[in-house]
Length: 135
Image 1 (cartoon, rainbow, N blue to C red):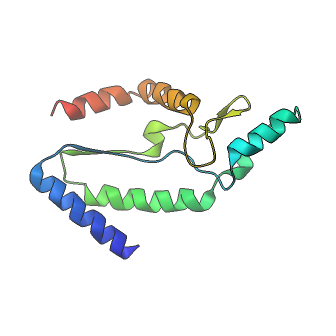
Image 2: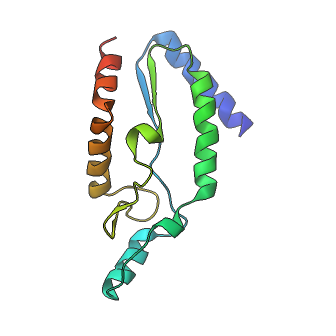
């Protein structure tokens, strides 16, 4: 991890020197299993699929640590915007009804992307983004 942080620090320094606007977006919730396959199995068996037990606490903790490091690295950078997971995804951003937002556990589906868009706009994210881009 320390080498990764140094590499990230070097990249951010280069971007700061060029005054290139940079938007860093955190990843959606991740899962321990292929939730797409599990959802299909439950659908075929006419059972409700509860995605919550498959969330990845380990990945969430890693993201939280990385997010704090990113915040420190870009603290004085007017040309960098860090959109946290909480800016992009609700805490229950796993599924709508029993249809999950993830295809296989690591990527969000079109349904998940649209839900994230609605959440981002509802929280004022589009204004935050517009303000950043107009600087």
